[in-house]
Image (cartoon, rainbow, N blue to C red; front, side, top):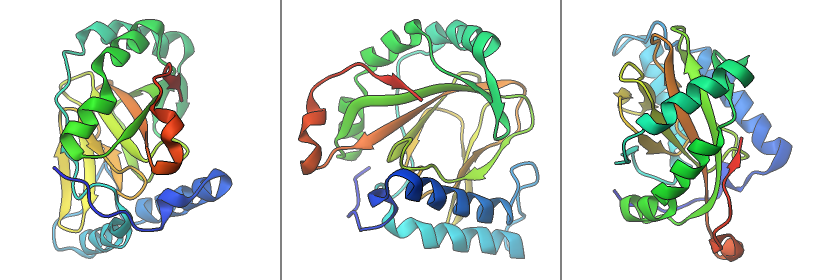
Length: 222
């Protein structure tokens, strides 16, 4: 999978402007479609969702979501349970929590900048935003990320029942394994599951003006 040409747009937004952009589009997307009752193909709701996805897609950094091969994640599942139980907060249809030290060490060992560069041709900073999430059967509605989280989102399911939903001009597709996509420009959500856990990682694209980020530094939590 290759990167596509980057155009001026949402990826240039910062601060409150980035938050407002994501919030407005998230409201619009959720007014059209629900992850609990996905629109039937060729219905008005389906056509409107595909239209919105097409309008947003012109500025995306990747031409399509990229399934990303990762090492076994069983080592961080206990950490996810512990952090969600002790420190979890509810919001936006899910329970979420910062990662623990075990997960931080595991993720740093993956060398995500190298994996992303090999899979997409994009350079990303080693500074990561990470959090655990758990959907207790309700699903997480379609949304756009604020660029404050990252230019790209990597969703790492920790349970086989978890499905990441991604909407595009051709319709909705579900991904069961780790998947990397442009969360700023691509509508995404989580299908209803039974206490499905995931690790969500925000990655910031590196440009010439951000060469200092090439230095390896500890990852940070969301």
